[in-house]
Length: 373
Image: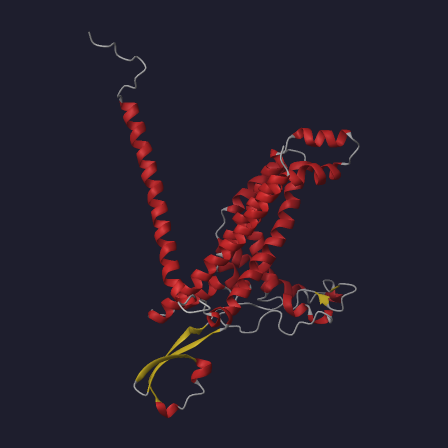
């Protein structure tokens, strides 16, 4: 006798076949995306490592990481093909040089670009986190949930989808062009004195500088931080607030001691997303902070004991890795020297972004392990 058929055995049907095909479609789509990302990152690392690293000690080409970009000269001297930066090339005897070709921005290194990228990311994230967390606290803890607050949340979500070029034009119009015009108002209405510092904090001289870039990038990433921070605050149990209030704490004391510490991991997660977006933007900094060539670093000439020199740091323009890669990439025709600079800069750029994001992740994990409920 045959064993009775299992009544719970899955039966082939149109819906089951459709579900199976959908499962494998999404699975292959995921693998395809991962494969493409792996190929891109592997190509950048493989070709960029040749520009940044070497096989002999100290295994790192420090000149590439510390020097400023300059024109690369490729020439023949004594029958040998040579490559040399413009600074050293100008010291050679012109009579011994033949078949010389120049390639702009393909020589030297990316030292000022690294410094500018780190300053832009750190400064903009500090501003964005301060404004974003404060806004999230107000929307989540203090505001009355009505039509006005709903409209504000809708506006925040809409801002998250605005292209970065629009934020760049906004920063150009507000910080670079419009603010210096306001400064000419009668009686110097916008001329603020920061006591006890002996310099004036005003809009004269903003133009393309760190301050313009910081605020533009901060406004660009602000919607992401506000939304993520507000969700983190809402995830904290209401009992934490009620227990603190029942013991006589004020509303702000309750938020500061019983809500923010437990919401901090989610806020740090939003900072990781913000770093990833801010660091890779080119259009906003192109209009507000970045220069194609600027060897002078922001802290050059700054003296800690003389506050009057501190303003030079904030009102200085910088070079940045995304903009430098863009400048080199627009050199037509492309050649092996531009490709070498592009992949080397992209390799260092990925390392910096990964390092900043990893720092935020480690801080988040540490805070999460200390505050559990």
